[in-house]
Image (cartoon, rainbow, N blue to C red; front, top):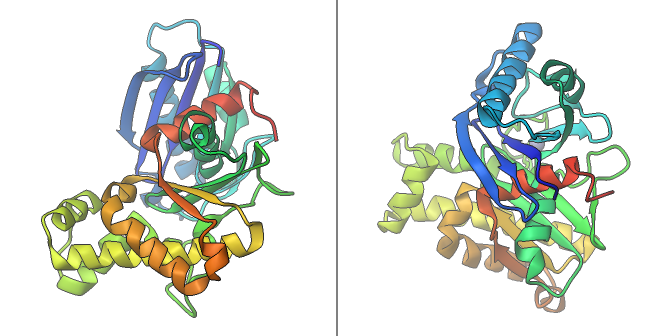
Length: 313
Ligand SMILES: [Zn+2]
């Protein structure tokens, strides 16, 4: 990385950003609520303006008096044309539809802005700065469990995003029939069973208490039976998603990030239980599940690498 990339990882609930130096160290790391998942879809023009303005304010606050920024890289959840940064649709931010986010932000900020799928950014970051540096393989599937579930694939050392930029929508693999309604318009998606949102919903359904994902992780650590069960269930469904992906791709290494990965001691055995149930033993023995090393920084690092055109696909 050259010394002047501002990178932002945008989610439906929060956005995190930093200035990334040539060694992959983050400076001025900051996190702000985005609130994008809750914006109304009745007035798209207003919602688009709110999203754009909030990102611009965040960019201004991160840059401050810093004048050496050359480019800005953004990771954004949803179906995105990475080559031009147009958001086609975003299941968790439904108010944004066919919106040229990169072009709009470039015009308003005066900087060259690239926008890629957040899951792809996180995979690039994890491959180059995290788990990817510790495995004897040039392929890695990285998944982020947050408001939704992001996924990204590195295949043969390169990010793979498919013919139209929509490959590895890992969160929308079908794990249940018919299953619960998903923000993408379908139902039974992995995202409806293994995201932080799903854990919060399942906890409330089982015991009637409304708790945040972080509170549920803490409760699980404190041996709360319901909290442990909903997290283990999320892990089991995650294993189903990984098993299906493994059947198609034969990728051996999977890294898991996002808040839910903090409950690793519950998540990991549940993932392996599902893999053992759904795959041939020979397949199973080739699969390695890792907790993300970069965690919340993976998306920022990957967005910076992609903006700097150090990583091509
Ligand atoms: Zn879906």
